[in-house]
Image (cartoon, rainbow, N blue to C red; front, side, top):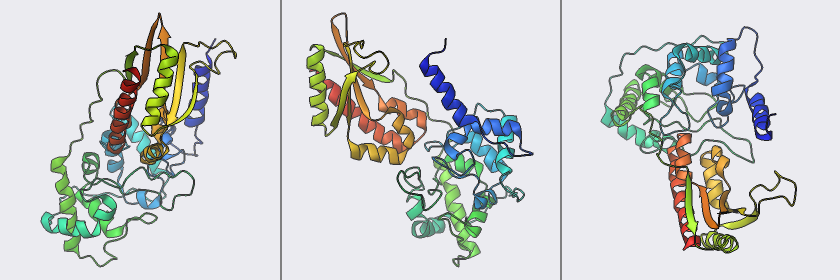
Length: 351
């Protein structure tokens, strides 16, 4: 007999992965897109955590080779992971499925390098591009996802100092994007703004110069357990009290205290030797969710206190360890801060 969690998992997977298939669609591509892409880019390609792939101005300005290499390399340090486990045939099927959203044939760009003055391009970049793409090319902040209001724009500015993008985009494609812009996004046509051919070539040369400081090699996941565990010299009730006091001392609001299996067993049958303390710092929570909504998988904060064979232990997840799963350097920084806070709370409550 299947357990409740496994049934719930099956229902969630069915809800996420069953997509409407258009007539003439690459069925394999549709299935692979549903399994690997839809959760971030949307079932219909209109975006979510990931960029809207069905945006006409996007599809009309990127080659199939760019899409294939993006799948292969991802965007190291950003939300987009590398799908190195997919075969070339599988990646090609996904590209065909995505391309079918456009009625326009895929553009082709040569691999001929653009010859420009990178130093002059750096000066142009600082004035014209840094406000959106970051002074160092690290891209716009967060994911572009909002919570309580419609988004005014479908994307945030991508990271240009990124090995995945630089491996996927040829000089000629970058040049075409600068010349034409992308309608429906903040990216305007530099040609229409009066930039000369030399200006655009210099900007391309500067963006390409980022390649020497980047790598497409995925960052290694942090080693070690995904939990922080401390032994407590106090009994269960005293330890719970200490955890609450320590969390409050770090500007967290206590949300509730409950038994670990509450709601999973009949009321009154809970194991009273396993307790969870839930707490939250709402500004920190909002900042983390704005950076990457997937952090909600392990928020709000919680500490579990367990008594077994006369021994009391205090434990929590390690946010720094789990954040490596999400390929988002900005999220890594805030999760590192959260790990330090968790350690301080656990240490203080078990002194």
